[in-house]
Image (cartoon, helix red, strand yellow):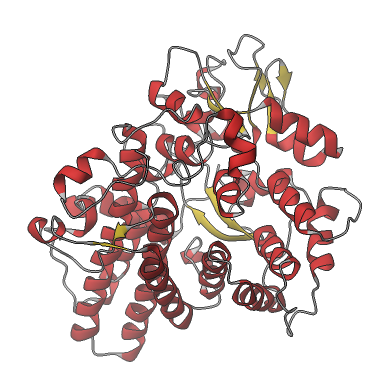
Length: 491
């Protein structure tokens, strides 16, 4: 069973049992009071912010619907009559009333709210605590919160474009009057938060705090922020520094990257933490990201899920055309087969193939109410992403970094070597194809197609309309709550 003694996870659980996590959307204040003169309380608002990352709205069914099922790599899955809102996303027939889009909006603003609450609490600790060592803990907590807030706004700006930036705790009246900011201003806000996080966060944590982000996590997210803006020199410089640190590396076995045993491994820069805490009932710090993608109608009960977000025939053919075997055997979980761990996937499951990257062996799924994947951490930033961002930046004209000695060829070869593939020229198309193969079913493909200008050609036959579906609609409920918001074009 997954180790669960980490203070970060357990503290988050303890907080979630109270009203502390009842943080209202978009930044309203919490009602609980902390004694800010006690250093042991510092972890509580930090843990609450991390706990918000794994909410259903931000990191489960709505997440895979908006950012994976919209790509050419995945189909809705499940059964025909289930998941109308997911089907609308799959076919680009969604509108501003789609509840999954609404959930993504509120889910990420809830994360920003938890981060803002953490920042306000850290300020109070800094005022009340006298010892420098305790003040240092609060300063690190500011780094955590600014990373988490930056991540939330990265999702919001890439999905919705012009959005309000809520940077402090506000009343409901204040929230209803916040004006949206143009993407350039939002990107600047994100960059500033990450620059501050880089300064405050340590290069590593002890096992006690396994799963907390580090200085290099913030660098990796900042590199991705610059990648989406086409600022390739900054991408190359940040990735070069991460590579040169030698603190990260690819695991030898691709399959193990997604195993419970290798969560928070040397390949991980940022994972959304989840654990059933070894319980078969009661409160737990888990998410349902893997569960909603588990094989539908499989047996026994702890080896089944909702069956949504399944690999598309196009993705399977893409892997076959490339001669992929290592990554294909991990990415695709076929009905009528038995896994290396001995779990049977029934031929009677309604879909021929499921997302193998979220497969969780039955030995971990011990919840009485069906616990498939409750121990699964969501991989958000992996070291292979750093390597491929670096290669792409160089392919787009950025100068090689001066610290790692890596070239675009070196970085690309390292990723392909793990997949048992021969070296290829580091052209832009080859690097983007490598991204598709490496991060298939990890909520990366749709936004990659949009940012690279390929969505019109690739997704057009599926219903995508350029100038419309590059952004999601501002949810209709939000337009009613805040009349300063303007709907995105063509909705």
